Length: 447
Image (cartoon, rainbow, N blue to C red; front, top):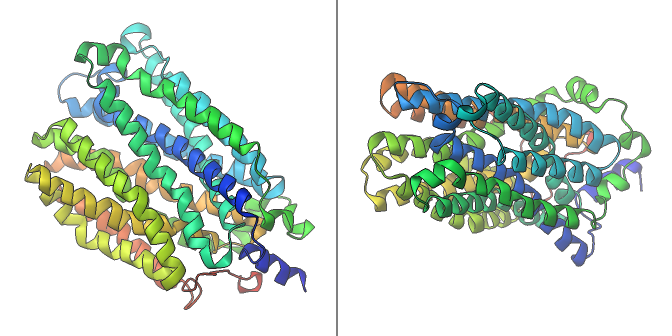
């Protein structure tokens, strides 16, 4: 068998790892993603609720402080491509496994330290500087985390179940949000003075538990088969980023566009919606509980969408999510504006388990298949994280700015539609049949 054929068979999972190893890989990926998104969602929730007055105290409209807090949110996303480049290089040249331990360690340490930071009233301007610096390091860690966790599964899973197995990695997103929302819900039961003084710190400090368990599990997994059995020259590409930019620019643009509606919708639905709900007079507890319930449902719907992609193809399932977002962009905020908890729940259920779930459940495979093994970590990480800048990073901040300017939700709905249309163009540009089978493997010569 030729080297190319060997690489493609391994990539497709023709020689799957044993069941015990797959369970370890699933657990390692879920926990790593859970910590990554637990940390990111903690900042998003804290930015909407407490970081404005504590770290960015400004007079007048309280939305101004929230906007500044979300600027730190954007900084984390701006740092993610740097992490994608740095850790993608390490993952493509040296080791997927080693990279995952490094990203998890950096993420766990920065989140824990945020929980110890003094606030503006204690150290003045150094408080927001330290917060944003730690947020930057969080972003660097996140930039390398997702791609590695996804590749360890997609490069090891059986061909007929790649969608299902890689969907497990995305459950960490829902799990991270549910854990962060639950942690904030508990500390919000404290008297407001205690919550503002020390209660908000507790969820950040608790991240150390996920970190310790995650590192222990990751130290005991094996390297992915696609990487260990690839040709020596493919594992030692001198500068994977240069090869990626030179030989695969179209694939990189496709990955960026596919990321936009998934990430943009998620942060607008469960971060900006908290701000919007406060603005129109809906209780914070109500909106957070609605989002949390929807994310609990999405925790399982992600597996459903991943398994469905093994039957009908990756591309059709991703279309369901993209077209669903186009349809839901305006009704989502109309339902929220009623103030009725039942309608708010319906908005969240349609927006998250259905639209967002269909995209995020199939995203690992559909994006992995865009790149050959020698630059796959770099391509996956960079495409994923550059897309994050323009969606999850700038999206909530832009949404708050649009709300301040127009005092209405329709500009935010239009923003969601733009994200969805760009992904629709990317899906249309994928070669016919390339992403429509459960193997979904893209051969080297196709580039």
